[in-house]
Length: 453
View 1: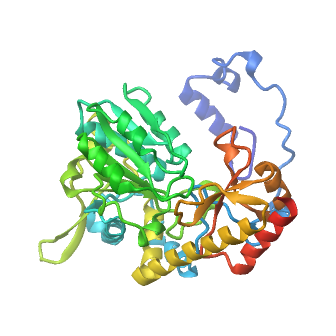
View 2: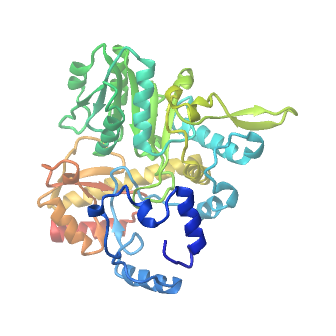
């Protein structure tokens, strides 16, 4: 409680605070903390700096830092470097959008509610599903909430099957959600093609399975036969949930609605959101209309007011969702409002034709990269007979960690080492190619593989 220009606590303020706390000194206030664990010296953080000194110090620290503008990145693994038009920054910075307040009162929140309604409409259309909520925190929490929803719908079933092709971090979040619920989570292994083993799924499926979860494109970039997985799941009266970490792929692939999904979740970061060191992002959640009462999260609906004018309001969601936790379908009652708005503006600017064109560019550039990288003889495709979208695994002739280190020294992040997720996988490199990569960028990558592969 020492003096500070931004914390102007007077001596009388201190006396008043101590009196309110029922103590007479700072020592009395800290009496519950054992003396042996208290810090007895002053923190060695130096003296306070002025604003201009802080800016100068930060500039000095960052002068040798690499960033996306000065380096080339082929990083993916669920977070992708897509183009974001400058107009989005300007629109989302408008003061009326920069609020975390829940729009309970529609008479004051028509703009926010309409934006969320448009978001829901676009996400539902992209996924080919009947209804979408107004977002979750990110893709992993959406997938975990899908599991909780399935357990409510199949209350007599206590097993969940998850493809090993699902993002490993999503699987960890799922297990965390289900830790104390007495639910068994079993992994369906992938086969030599990099896709979910259908024979293993058949052996694991039983009458006690509430939900089957698969991802396409999966973590390795491979495109799954989601129709077959869906049909098998429903043959045992289990629900099927699709996870999509790269929803841009749905411009070219079958949508979850087309292969009869019960729930479809995903990550909306691809819709123009910056990579931002891992967040904040926006969780996508869609389902069939018949399941809407079990759907977690916020839902905006369109109606008319007393004068017959089009209007928007939160709907099919009781206050228990927000204040009576034990009765709620989800205990996450906030959402990623600003990120959902960001995604909506990006989708509106890109449009339907642009959405397809971007997907085609991602696919074409990835195929070019695969061809040129394997021509070097320094690496081979792990799943050469399996279709991918904008991500694939390259097996290097050397350690992926060592290769990445050498590339970083040359201002390039060539991909993600699979050893990070699978300790025994020392040579696998997961590479993502988006529309932002030019032929010259890919050729630079090829040159580095020739030198260091």
